[in-house]
Image (cartoon, rainbow, N blue to C red; front, side):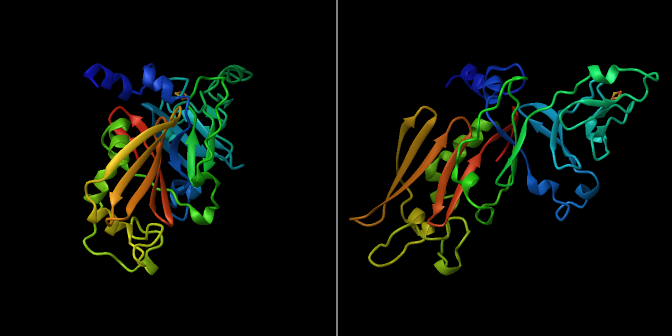
Length: 295
Ligand code: FES
């Protein structure tokens, strides 16, 4: 890929070709945990957060009915920052002149206008569709007035809540760099190496600690051992269907046995990796802006 192609595929702000493409996909905007008062007591009084996604600044909040609102962050009046808005239960009020907005973007009040003004009926703040799946609050920044697509039925979205958890981390790189790092299977033999294995009975939910499926001469090998003892895997890939690529990683375990690990990459930013027989990670690479990505 040359420099121009690299720019074209990694610049995702408003008005860019890749940004327009990315806006056709649901993107994780925040974790449900970030709005949990047990984890952040401020959320009991004011469930509102500033969010940056695809190079756009927005505010995400939940109103008293439980509805989510995702609005552009700059007030449509004079551009004041709605991240400082007062949360009033049924909407948020701009701190500058008191315009108030509902979760769907309707302007509810413009209190500084003359009595009888109907200005607020003609004002609307851009709002974006939001849905919650598996502890993740997804947003859709597609063209205004068009219908968002369904989210794919990844197992993490269909598994019961007792079997999923969500987390995130901020990386200082673009989405493609993050994606490339994660989908590369050979790094796991080194970056995620454990020199010693642990007993399998305490390994549930630990990254790579549990066994791979099957036995080797009557033993169940931890994934840590498989990766450690075969540090030069053979990597194959094939496009299963448009947008879905299967990556197969083969590691020799014995002269007779080969370990096969299959991961799936789903266009544009998601892949699903088995970490052991009891744990799978669905990893999304959320373009925050051109140089930051949430993992
Ligand atoms: S800038 Fe928001 S109400 Fe005036």
